[in-house]
Amino acid sequence: MAARRILIVGGGVAGPTLALVLAKHLPSSQITILERSITQSELGQVVDVEGPSQEILSRLHLLPLLREASTREQGIEVVNEQGELVGRLPAGQSGGASKEIEIMRPRLSEVIHNATNEHENVHWRFGKTVTAIEERLDDLLAQVSDVEKKETQKEEFDLVVAADGLRSDIEISSSRRA
Ligand SMILES: Cc1cc2nc3c(=O)[nH]c(=O)nc-3n(C[C@H](O)[C@H](O)[C@H](O)COP(=O)(O)OP(=O)(O)OC[C@H]3O[C@@H](n4cnc5c(N)ncnc54)[C@H](O)[C@@H]3O)c2cc1C
Image 1 (tube, rainbow, N blue to C red):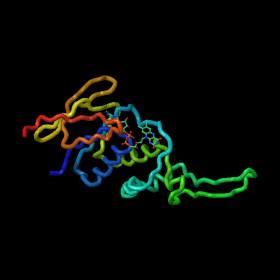
Image 2: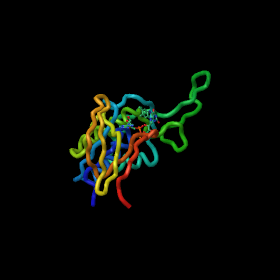
Image 3: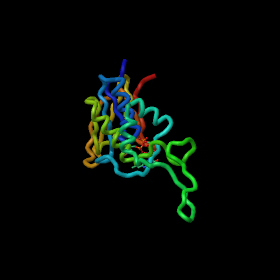
Image 4: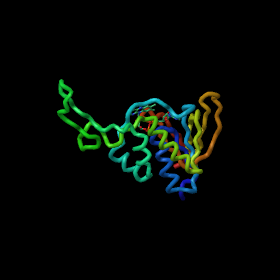
């Protein structure tokens, strides 16, 4: 059975990218993204979009928007003491210092976030997190918590994905019987 109620914890880069993939392939699903920050973070420096990430974002037809929002760095030029050009490393060259798409992390996040807004079945909830997830026989029961008010409510999902970054602390307990 295709998953219907999907919870993605973490609205950074991976979470909303997955939401886009799921919205495309499982259009009847309801996808909820929980992000503990109150708004999308404006923190971060340049991120290179290359390799598998470029392939995935290409399949999501986001490369033109990402190029538009990129730093548009042309590459690196080396000059001598007289200011004369002695070498050039154009962006996008294999092994070069500048990648084809270099983008500030907040802009990367913004482009992907905006793309999710075009799908009615993707729902963002800022200032929220999960404090517990219990795997039951037929579904998962998540305690969704408001970060500021500390209020918690129990919600049922068919699939929960932890996309809360490198320091992920999402744990799933199980009440399933063997
Ligand atoms: C603010 C910030 C700035 C960064 N700047 C750079 C940079 O300049 N250059 C670079 O190469 N990489 C940077 N990174 C790292 C880079 O974005 C990630 O390593 C990469 O994009 C992987 O994305 P991700 O979605 O897996 O994780 P992240 O981008 O880390 O996103 C995880 C998201 O989950 C949210 N979250 C975490 N825990 C919970 C929770 N319990 N409940 C709900 N939400 C939760 C976080 O607020 C965050 O929005 C930055 C990450 C962050 C969060």
